[in-house]
Amino acid sequence: MEETLSTFLRATEIPTQGARTLPGEWFTAPAIYEREMERFFHARWLCAGRSADVASDGDYIVRAVGTESIIVTRDETDTLHAFHNVCRHRGTRLCDQSGGHFAAGIQCPYHGWTYALDGRLVGAPHMTGTDGFDRTDWPLLSVAVAEWEGWVFLNLASDPEPFATAFAPLIGRFSRFRLSTLEAAHRIEYDVRANWKLIHQNYSECYHCSPVHPALVRLTPANSGENDLYDGPFLGGFMVITQPGGSMSLSGRACGHPVGDLPPADAQRVYYYSIFPNLLLSLHPDYVMVHTLWPQSPNRTLITCEWLFNPASLADASCDPQDAVMFWDMTNRQDWDICERSQLGVSSRAYVPGPYSARESLTAAFDREVRAVERVSASETRSTVPIIPAV
Ligand code: FES
Ligand SMILES: [Fe+2]
Image (cartoon, rainbow, N blue to C red; front, side, top):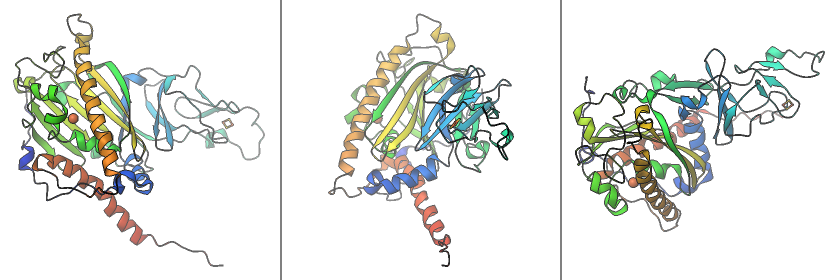
């Protein structure tokens, strides 16, 4: 087994560069939120869910990304597609469900225009003879889509960076976990009254673990972490599971078969990666927990959490996925509660940015990635002089 070639550093060995926390308006101002949606959620690759959710032709899921709604489906040739959920006739939203199966193409409920699973308009009642109308001119508008390790990714940009380029630092990195073979045992949706960045910031440090997660620190000491991705859009590393044969569960024991072909060191580690902008990946020896973040407003984020297991675990009555689910549901709620308290505090007029500790170096790195949007916006503002028509 080939060990991942990585340089691991403790959080305290990664400079915070004297960083302070973000200004309050970054968590509250609609204009900043809109800009982040535009720059990050409408321009970067987003994790939309598992490929298994669209396993067969006609299966579909719908994801809301700010004001946009995107349909992901698979056609008869096994090709994955993503489309804007907007009819080409008068713009009506085509699907109002979060997922399902198209038995006979994608039909608009308004006047019955019908699209094939590859987006072609194949039915437009009473349009024959309409001046200048040609069905081939009116396919659904497509959105870039990619699959990686059993997940579907979307990119709403008109000319997106290729997925393989954007995700180059991660591709192949987790092969030993055989992520594409894992199956979901459980899913919980959380509605959190906090800005999406607070969720990432909280995930990226364990400085808070002793006060917030007393059960977690009995399984993994708060200062046991080392990191191998500590700058840029992907951040994370591992923490040590102290109990031999242990895992992050209520019982403290592994509750499933190993997820992949793991070297001995991985049996005592849980890896945590924040994958900008909407995916949190937590790799345990016996299961993988996945959060996807869906901002709703400056102070509200919907979070989907899934627990993925080796299929052998799901077929084995001696395995108990609920041991992990209940542990992390408790821990997630501790995190959401403290993030909601943070949201209230940073929304106060009394809040001023505070100093990050040495243990929060990945959180400071996350902020650097977020702050890059400010630089992009500033340079574009300088170069985009509004043209006022002569009157
Ligand atoms: S708006 Fe969809 S068919 Fe008319
Ligand atoms: Fe936490």
